[in-house]
Length: 408
Image (tube, rainbow, N blue to C red; front, side, top):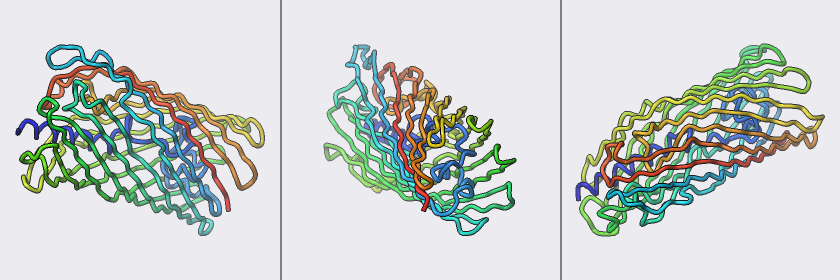
């Protein structure tokens, strides 16, 4: 029974870490339909409306008066597992789609206090995922259902130190909830875990405007130290598989830099770089009420890079066309990839439109296709307990973004 417990806790640790820290796969970058149209190139320097404050709070100083930006992104992912092989070498059933679609809403309200001081508040869903396999699939002891939702409220403030330099800061108040299931003992036992947490981090930003046409931005998002509390349950009354548990983990720091340049009245270009410090994860420890220390899982993730370039074209006084291209690196190497996280490097292809209805109201729509490299899973490489299963994954994502911005 100890092996069943170890396997279950390893699965819990894997999904909790992934849900809160997978920038390439499950960190939802989609917090602005306008920025999405450029594949988030220049998001740290763009500050074209209030939604950009998620990427750089200093950009609030470009939002005059009182403004409200409300939007959302429909995320339609697809992950197919083929060539599935079980422990005994037999061929398992392929899985057509394990990742479910979802909507990620966002909103930002900003207010100009005077010529130098600005305040705001943002509502975002920065992490989330839903995956589900058939209960009888060959790797069910490594994971069946995984569902994670988050919500973050961020009070923000920005200040113009000079005509060219702005700085800002915000507090990230984040709630996370997770549920996952898997099987044990040759699928005879079904286990489930649910837990949640509320913790606080912060973000800092600065923006320098060389002139009316060129500006650069730099932003930092802190670690958030989470302690999820919940319960572990099993379909049978087994020792140590029915008790309260908690898991401690720390989400990584993020550092972003961007540039925006207006070439002429029609064309603007932008670029973005982000470094996410996944390597800060060394272990994930799980504690129980009945057994004080249940498990310590080693995580060997790597720091990742995100690169993006984009351009915008002003069609006329009302319409603007956006496009962008990005490369997003996975934190998971092949030797540590699991069925719950079939993640790989990916390329973003984005386009979007901005429509100015009048002086107060504008709309943004965006579409993105994300093509991921094929991902190979072999649980024998991870060193975790459980059955040996291997598979080939084909992953892609479609994003549909929509938002409106209103100036009071």
